[in-house]
Length: 250
Length: 220
Ligand SMILES: Nc1ncnc2c1ncn2[C@@H]1O[C@H](COP(=O)(O)OP(=O)(O)O)[C@@H](O)[C@H]1O
Ligand SMILES: [Mg+2]
Image 1 (cartoon, each protein chain N blue to C red):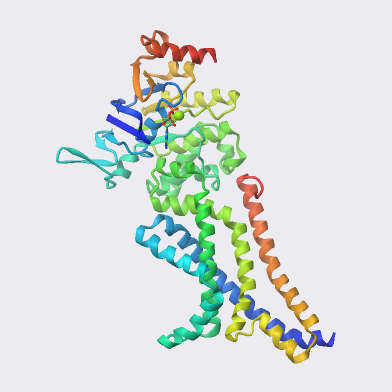
Image 2: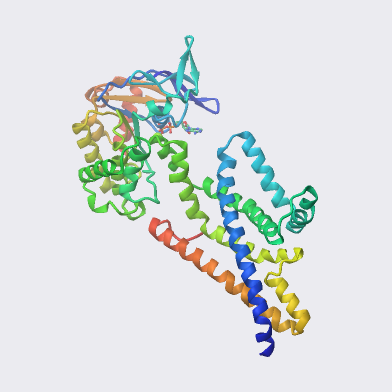
């Protein structure tokens, strides 16, 4: 993403952001509430459109195009093709409540990737095995605990085999004792598949463990960026230090 | 009791016409509700404009006049419809206008996270609508649609104004032929209740089942 800017009501929430995520890289974004972390993920997921700058996935422009040296907005032609490389897991799961767990996972592969039902089911069952929820395949989301729902949401996003997966505070709506199992699921995934991950979290132990790189954001800007040991262990910027101290004191 | 035996056949015949009209107009109304309710927000500006005119026209003018218009004025332009067909169309279009507002509200009540999940899963707009958003909107619209159908059933009395011998008109004819308005109109009321009750029961049952399955709590 290059020089990406996003304003809401004249207020710049993301200010000229340059950010590159390498293939397979696990990037963790931390920062105080309101610093623009969610907005960045939503921009990459095309849930928001940038006011300036552009985003590329695997070298292809997302929702825009070059036109004689300038970026033109709203090029929807290749939007879906490029977007299929991105997946996202939300804070509040957003499972489809009127579909069983299995159908939730099969929906996008059959509709969007035009996969056969059999193939999609096989893939879905494989994912359910991995999150240890085969027994719940025919349950509805409303019958599951928050932690179970979030694991299904992760499986649902994985079924599309994106090349980059976005996680937005995926444990902050869960009971404290369920947080561990979700983080464990993500850690296992990170170890298994060569998929880039952009993870927004307030779980510092998890961040340190999973990240190749950590970014600290404040007021829509990257304040500090580097390996987890540096940013989390020996931050150079006073704002980072203050933020980490505030988190630890909580 | 003789009077009851005397008028029952005529009343039941009227009830049959009422029921048939209500079912046909009801199907038309639900179809219109869903299509108009969805496309008013999803279609382009001109679609939105045309559909808004349709909705406001039928909500803003008297159904009595509409049915007169279709039955007595359209023939002047060479389009002659049977009384039942004219009545069914007007009833269906009328209820459809109200129903489309129900559907629109229900679609808007689907949490934004559902749309966002559709984008994140890269579903086409068509898939998102038909597979995710409309089904969820419908689960919220069961009870209001049931009420709409009951209103529509009662509204079939409108057809008596264009000579259709539906239940209300059959009652009036029987009363003027036999006297005993008390008994006859009580019977008519009873028959309306019997016709409406299954709609209320069925929609309530459907609503409860859906709520239990989706675990979304009781109706507000
Ligand atoms: N759709 C929106 N409309 C208006 N303001 C928004 C919108 N989305 C986010 N904001 C504002 O942008 C700022 C950054 O939000 P967000 O990206 O959610 O931060 P974070 O995820 O770091 O807490 C906040 O001040 C928030 O109120
Ligand atoms: Mg956020």
